[in-house]
Image 1 (cartoon, rainbow, N blue to C red):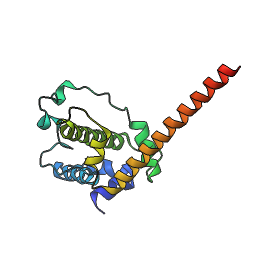
Image 2 (spheres, rainbow, N blue to C red):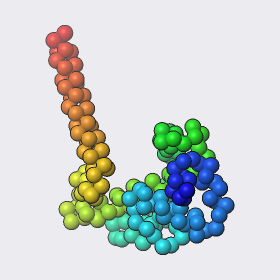
Image 3 (cartoon, one colour):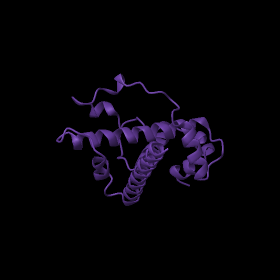
Image 4 (cartoon, helix red, strand yellow):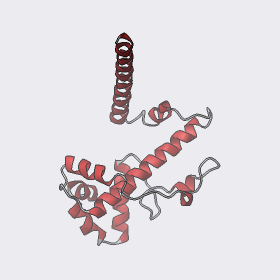
Length: 168
């Protein structure tokens, strides 16, 4: 059974791996990062560091302080939906949260680099970055179109309420 498989199957396999040497833990982090669509890193950090990408428009990672556990409940529900235990180990959830946040941060930095020529970050910049990953691209376009439909429905509902208020 591969390292990624053990983590996907359940949180209990992850804790057993945490007692292993650093090179196994690094392989686990790298496999997960690849699974999420990132690139493989040779350093000992779990995912690419924003410090290496810090430029004039991006302050160093040390200036950002983020609250831990913001997405833990959502991740627990998602893990359960994908077949994990209803109450996964906290270490597993923390690791997944770190990986997901680093992936999203890296994606935002890449989108910011793409948009720097225009000076404005748009949704299309993100769609451009995920253009080669068809499942992600299809899901994003579906969610964007659904969001647009909801906006139009809310607008139509507000107009109807205003008409009713003026009639009475």
